[in-house]
Length: 338
Image (tube, rainbow, N blue to C red; front, side, top):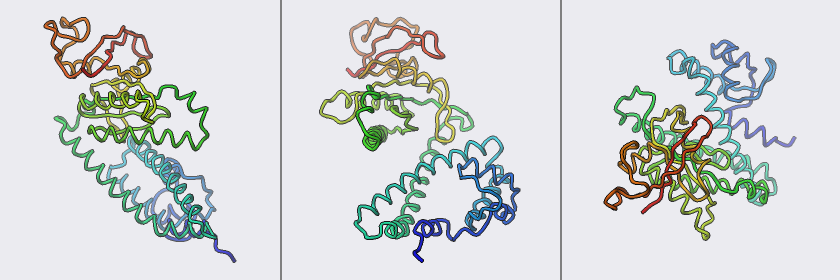
């Protein structure tokens, strides 16, 4: 009988051939079945009936550890759903990409049996990938912990940050000219370059939303520089980076489970929708932080102080107030370098 490569890979990843039902897993872990079912649902696992033999000892250990985190108060009622769903979504996306990568490598190898080659690749590559994922996770934990510890009031739910939205101009027309693989590659290149620019300025990408990326930085100057560099690259005909527009807001931001929330985030998104192609708009918070001026004081009409000398590294042009969702008269300034 020909070995089943899928079963072999599954057994390797799950540290054994599935021999348990979900009822048996819950009993072995000492966890009520309804609790186990809820956790599995949040993680995005396929539904299994009480008689489906689909689990291994690895599932028992994981369920027991989850129960221990709940008992310790780490996974409280308010955090359980959000945290576990975040794990499920993040790892599901990562697993899809990694599986596609291994499958492509197996096909490109020219092996007479690509399925067997995939099994061998999984056994060779995945332990290294797993170790690398743990390393990256620890590095990001260290970075996130450092950011938390430098806040004056660690218990505060919000910290001041620059929020940058960058939107591809002409995305709809460009996407129609690409096949699925080409569109994915184009968007991945866009996100990769944005991530590199963000890292160069001490910022970080929070997420990509179709043709947009959301980036944050602790320093408003870093936020401005990221946005201006992306816009400049988009305006360069020699650069493959797409034509973009950007919105930058600075103010208190709530960080939760790798995402950011609050009015500052909403304003940055609204500014992006108002910005003309190839421009950067900033809100009042970013304007005051970058210019050193206070809105409401006597200001010059456009870019200069009364004596004609620039006060900052940037020039600002006030834009007419606009009504957008959630903000009746949103004030913004167009940002440029001197």
